Image (tube, rainbow, N blue to C red; front, top):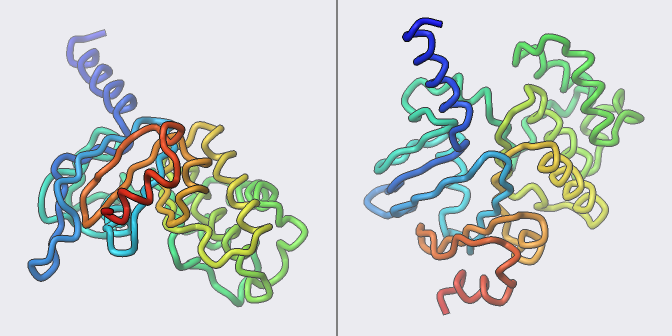
Length: 248
C-alpha cells in the first residue's frame, strides 16, 4: 500500500470512529435575543441522549441546528467528524429526523407513503425496505389503508418508519410522544429502545423528565439556552432535573 493510500485509509478510519455529534461554543441569536449560548456537547456513537428543559429553553432549536435545518451564529458543529457547512446534503443522508409534523401524505396509504419517500431517497429496493419497516412498526395489517384513517399514534409510527427508510446512523426525535395515547406511547418507546439496541445513536427532545430518564442513557438539561446538566441518566432523578429546569 502506498503512503498516500495508507494516509487516506487512516483518515477514513478516523471519520468512521468520529462522534456523530460534536458542538463547540455553539450559539444562536435572533434579533439580538440569545436562543442558544455556548453549547459544547459530544454525543458518541450508539449513545441515547435526552435533551430536557422548559419551554423556550432552546431544546428544539438545538435539534434543528444539529439536523442542519437551522444555522448557528456562533461556534462549530461537526457531524460524523465533518464540519457542517453550506453544503451538508451528504451529512443529512446519515440522519433520520422525527419531527413535530409527520410529513406524510394523508390521502396515500401507509405503504404508498413509504414507497414514495423510499424512491425519493434513492433506496435500492424500495418495496422490500417499506415492507420491512411496516413490519417493524406493527402496521403490516394496515399497510393499504390511507393515513387519514389512522390514529395519531399510528401516524407517528409511519412517520418514524419514513425517517428510517434510508437506514440513518443518527436519529433525531423532537417530542415524538406529543399527543399520543398510552398504548401509542408504549409502542413508540419500544421502537426507540429497539433502535438504540440495534446500534443507532439517538438524540431525543422530550418534556417528560421521568420518561426520558428511563429511556435514555444520558441526560442533557438546558435552561435559557445553556446546558446546566450533562450526566448519566441513571445518576439523576426527576426532582433534581426539575429544580435545574426551573432555576429554583
